[in-house]
Length: 307
Length: 307
View 1 (cartoon, rainbow over the protein chains, first blue to last red):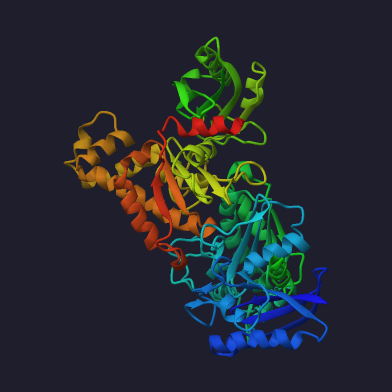
View 2: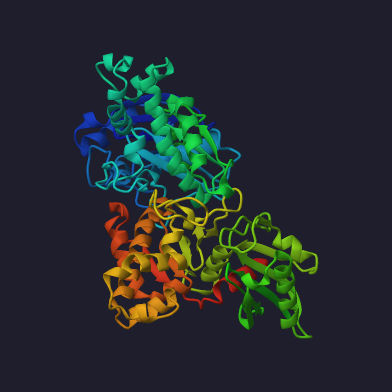
């Protein structure tokens, strides 16, 4: 049986899935990216995990990899601010030394967009954007039915569009990018900015506060939690109005842990987006949640790119 | 002999060219859009001008139209803030009543991009943007070698990306769009903001001050004029750094009257763009001037779209 390995590299965790010829993930694993310590250990870990997952009767037909700042053309991760390993990481070439199957690498959000197009909610859409909200804020863009790479393989860095000039410091070293308003750390910063206004919030009793904890309390009616996602939705909505003026997509899909805030995020996002939308674009752009599980979309998309 | 009429509708002037089968404009005319007074007179004027230009041995093979806020799908100009006629203008259908040849309408900046791709400096580029700097700020985008329309035909409204939130009032009614920093009126506003700092500027002796007059003095060394285009270049450069993070084009082509400021505009533009560029995109994006004459690019592109 021929299988493809889909690898979803994240700044925090790396997930691997074995995908069969029907495009179904039949085996899953994950490990901590950070805990690998060095790039060399990380590469060995990907290789050994894939080998361990394969059964005796399974032939590896290829490896598809989605990674932050991953470049389809070069096969490398280049200067990803949210990766624990710095500089230029030639992941495709490093893995190719111990695998003789085809290996394809792209941006993790591009892989998620391919997954959404082939297996998720974007099947019927030719123009759409997937925004990943996690350790970073990434994006994959489809235009005229094709994934957009740009001239150098790096198109779609929407987390690094400067939306609020002079605003929050981003991991990339610049100020006012979308990322520090929409990623895990951004949610925590918004929480810290708002918490003194809600001294009775149940969230303040928690020992470890992250987006997931805030969302859980918000879903139970906690006003501070609700306000954190309202503010986050408004930041995203303001940015999305600009994204519309650029490519006029039919839909933007939200993907990743933070999107689990659901309507608490989506409703204020849509309201702020429409408030800032150029008249010809009003009431046209759909805001959707990814229809694939968090662990699956980028794995499936990366695997599908091996072809 | 079969010819195609290319029509470049602008908020101020409308230009028409007859294009032969070799893609050459062999006859030109222009008239004032504003002076037409009403939409009906304007449509009649386009029709009569085309008919007047045709010689007895010439057969009209089609009409290609570029217009602000022009929509390829609907053939209409929809709510263009810089047009003297308001609301929805069904130009293609209006003209079709008196012409039985194929008629195609698109955004004027899209037409300029097609012209640049087929006949200008973008022949070898698959990913590029044309920015038109005139009465408005428009754009045409190529991605993967294809013109980008978006899901509704309105993609590429880069003049209406909010680059400076809370900034200058735009003709669209919102604040901080790129347009009021890069269009004719924007240049005049920048001039007015700076003029008290340069009381000895020779420009202040002029009775009518517009971008062309300011550029003429700037090229002669006038410090106020130089500063106006430096500031304008910086506004554009800041925006272009964001455009790069979106689609990573190989080049941005500047087109239209204001781009004639030349290096006075381009050098500060590049400096500010690189200062604000995400590291992976630094020193990659070419800033070029359109290689086609102002009157030709949109006419040729619009005519070429008739096919």
